[in-house]
Length: 168
Image 1: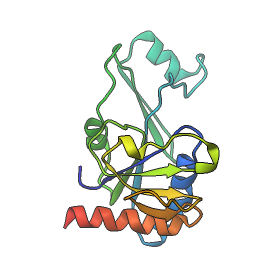
Image 2: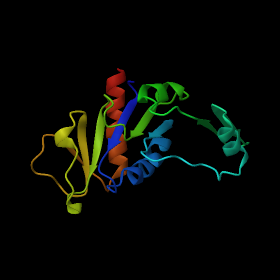
Image 3: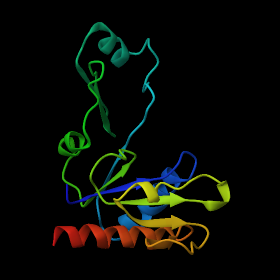
Image 4: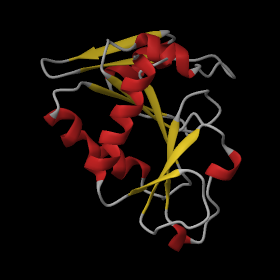
């Protein structure tokens, strides 16, 4: 999983906002990006009375909903059958970089979004794979690379350099 790079942080730290803010930089470089987001919640994409939900409820293992603009694959899982990150990455079309929000236990390099002003403990002291921290406040006591959370283009460039170095 050489082209995979994770974004972690406590709930409400701004992980999704950072990923969204980095996308224009990746696009301006002509890079294709895929994003995998882990959730601990049951996912609902359509109301229960819509066709794809009816097919899933009737027992279909997979349902694809397609339009001229995009498509979605719904895959019903057996209980305790959560997919591994490596399996999800393999399902993706080839891209330049896969950003992963969550999947803290996966063995991938990652960046933590950390806001000291929130008063919440950071992840990086307990997670070896955190190679850098994107923060809105300079950190004095860390051995990790610190990036300015308010400069998403710099964070994106750092991630791309990390991905390129791993693929070299």
